[in-house]
Amino acid sequence: MTTQNINKVKSADIELKDKLVAVNRVTKVTKGGRTFSFSAIVVVGDENGVVGHGLGKAKEVTEAITKGIDDAKKNLIKVPIYRGTVPHTQKGKYGGANVLLKPASDGTGVIAGGAMRAVLESVGIHNVLAKSQGSSNPHNVVKATIDALAQMRDASSVARQRGITVDKVFNG
Image 1 (cartoon, rainbow, N blue to C red):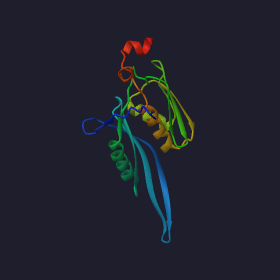
Image 2 (tube, helix red, strand yellow):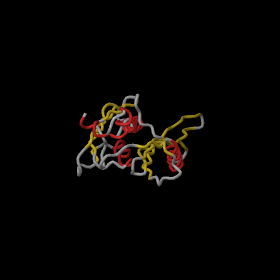
Image 3 (cartoon, rainbow, N blue to C red):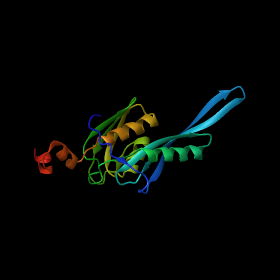
Image 4 (cartoon, one colour):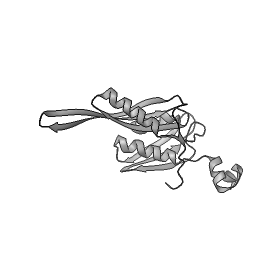
């Protein structure tokens, strides 16, 4: 995670769509009985390269989702998209979750599991091959996927970093 592409984005000027990834019911046992609360993982994105994730906790599901959306809007990142797919193969890691994202040709679709699919669709990627390895915990899979997307770099940023032209990046 040395050369991360962390382009923070402000949520005020973008139309964001939210996707609920998972809801978890948590029980706290007290002397008066059981107290239930809910935690919700939410992913928001504009389907044009901006994505963020959030966690909301509350006594009711709708409140938890609302809090999750507000949290997700606070940590948005910009992701480079090249012809509807990711620019290059990238691995992401968070906790016990490892994810692998590979570019795919037109018409492939989003080949990914539950939590990864929500993130990739929210960011606006239409063709990608993805594999989740290790933990299937939705919290960690979402964070690992966003880690992989944050490390993505397009050709122009690579050329700028190396101080060469875009043609030299490909022809070397």
